[in-house]
Structure formats: structure tokens, C-alpha cells
Image 1 (tube, helix red, strand yellow):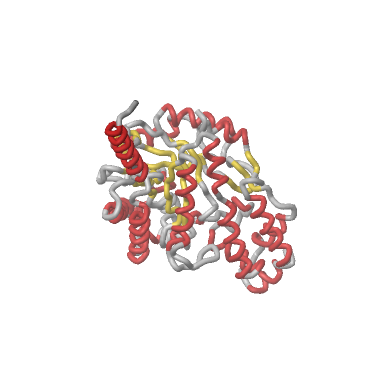
Image 2: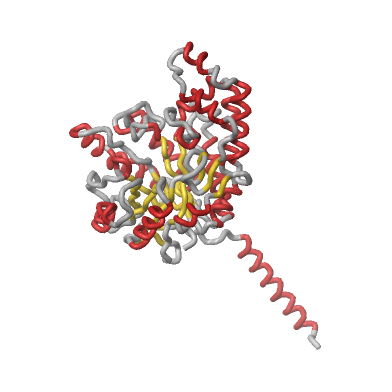
Length: 419
């Protein structure tokens, strides 16, 4: 039998235990930011993290070929075509439905089920400004979309790479950056100021979000179309701009990795003269085509080894299943993490697909038709009526939903995310 004093003592002890447990439960769990350690990425326990995953291309930065278009290929030009087809109000409504349904939590659940651990999220800078883009001119739209990605990634144990795919002024000078045919970001001080401000806002908001692996400053800067002194000048302007952006980020955020791509489609790294100017940066390369061998990426490996920092293959793909499987083996043997491009697009050559709606070719015909004058626009409308175009756009969105998308099992097997 327990005496009265013992009972009081026991109750007191139990109360203290309960309070302690409650306090511990109310405290946030320890953050698990990833960091660079030599040529590896490690978590808060010092365990190696090897990137393997996919890219959410087309969702926040539409590309023509992912809709089945071959000539009209940038967000601005696609939107112009849709406004001419169904009118600006219905085009804006389409973009909202597209953003709400093309990528959802169900897509993150599927990506996680394949064994992936990382999702690269390409985005357009206009999502963080009041410039008209994908049906809105709201600077909070980008944060709303990224906030959703963070929730979905956390629920599915995935990491995120935030990739500014379309920079102010254009960093590439081709369709993929939605530019006007030249990498104006490299020379335009106003564009650069906007670039820095957006990264400042993103890093301020997400400084404590450990689901985010890192910030990729500018996708594929300075394409291959410039030669000689002009190319050299554009290339030389990249590292100073990167340094300014990292400085802005570090004023808010000392937690996240910053990812730096080289010029000429993320393939050249000879322009970097101060390659270790920050203690938490890594470099990112891209590769499409060519032999699936170590020799094909020897320059990337050599640069990585010379600076003693990680190298990550941010984009790779659009090839045969055999080629992709072989290249995965090469990347793994050489400690290069990877995210295949893209996760979803119309038809094949991706992890998942959007089935082309019956009659979609009429939308393609309108978009690809000459529309350089108002007369040509009126003529092109004979190829696809407003009503037909609206119905097909709605059906495209329906087909893009995770519950209706095509799953390309052989492709998924080839990229070996479950290994």
C-alpha cells in the first residue's frame, strides 16, 4: 500500500513528466538543412545526400514543345496565341486552371513513390512581380505556388531546388528564358536590380525552410549563339552577378546551398575565376545527347575535382531508355546527382504524360499558323474556332491531372530513382 505522502510525491513527479513532455512536443523539431561538404552534400547529421529526382518543367514556365507546338515555344508567345484563339479572359482562366491542376500534391506523392528525393522547380521571375503572366499580375502568386510545393514536399519527404528559369531581361537569349532574343540580364542594370530583389525576397521568406535544398540562381545562362569577344564578355559578366546575388541572399539566409550554372547551356565552367567565394555553393551542369559515357562529361568532372565542390546534373533526358539508364550509371559512378527533365508533358519522353485531347491538332494548327498580321490572325481562326479551342484547352487540363496522366513505366525504370 502506498502512503499518502508517497501518493503526493508520485503525482508531483507525473505532473513534472507530463509538463516536460508537453514542452518538448510543442518545440519545433531540429532543422535539417543540407550543406556542401567537399564534393558531397550532407544533412545535419553529416550523412551524404545524393540528389535523384525530376524537374517540374512547363508548370510555371510553359514551353511550346510540351504542348505539342514546334514553332511557338516561349510563355509570352504561347499566351499571345491563346489570347488570339479564345480571347484574353478565357486565356487567363485557362492559365489559372492549368496552374491549379498541372502539378498538385498527388504529383508529389507519385514522384516520391518512384524513389525520388528531390524536385527541381523551374519558375518565371514574373510570378514575383506585378507584370502580367499566366493570367495574373500579382507578386504573391510565386510565393503561393512555392508555399504549396514546400507543404507537399514536406509531406512526402522530398527536397526542393528553386530554379529561376526565366530571369529579368533574359539570361539565356532564347525561348527558354522568355526573352527577346538576347541575354539582357548580363548587360542591363535595371534587370539585374530586379533579379537581385527577387532573390532577396525569396531568401528572406524561406530562410528557415529546410525542405528547400537550395536556390539555383539562373538556368542555362548565355546560350551558344554568341561567339568571340561578345561571348567572352557575356561569360565574364556572370560570376560578378552571381556574387552579388549570393551576397543579397546571405544577408537574409545563411542556411541554404546556392547552385551556380555555367554559360553555354550549363556546360562551360572556365569563366569562374573565384569558384569558392562562398562556403555553401555547388555547381550544376546539363547534358542532352552525345554518348552516355564518362568521357562525355569529363570537363564537368575535371572542374568539380579542381574546385573540390559538388557537381549536379540539373537537366538530362530526352533520349532512349537505354541511353538514360547508361548515363545514370555514369553519373552515379562519378558522384554527380541528377534530376531528369521533365516530369510531365504532352505524350512521351518524360516520367508522366498528358494525353493529347482528340482534336488537339486543330489548336496546334492555329498556334503554328502565320499570325504576323491581323489578317493572318483572322485567317488562322478558320483552323480552330473559339468554342473548339476553349473545349480543347479544358480537356488538356483534365488530362494533365495526376489521376488522368499517363505513367511511363519504362522511362521511370530507366532513370533508376528507386536504386
